[in-house]
Image (cartoon, rainbow, N blue to C red; front, side, top):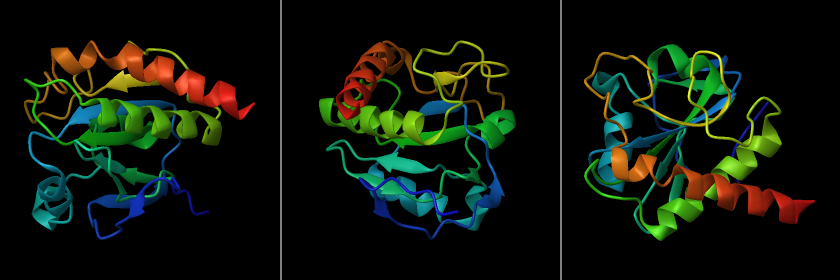
Length: 171
């Protein structure tokens, strides 16, 4: 089954993923610590041993690198039950309004696509569902415990609110 977000440019060059095996219940927000094209390029490098389903530029442009039913390598033990979204930028910055809107659109779509992704802020990636972030106990050993950074974590309620509004308008 092909699972792609129609609002994204399909850029399927990543080799750092497993086909199938993903049963999403989490939408995990990341910060790339680099720029949009550099992030995509890094995920296409076999030496990276990392990937995400989506990458969002500061202007809200969305690239999808991995289908959401496939397992991207972005969150260690949560890889097989999550959708990973890298945002261009750095942990010291907040997301732009365009990035917030793009995240809300993908998150709203994800909730419609997968019944197990709930519309709430998740604080337990081991057992919970919904909107989450990388540094919330998802151990991958790369020193990313602060990902995506406090300013972005403070913006998660905005993403949730906007996604709920999008889905309410679809009813």
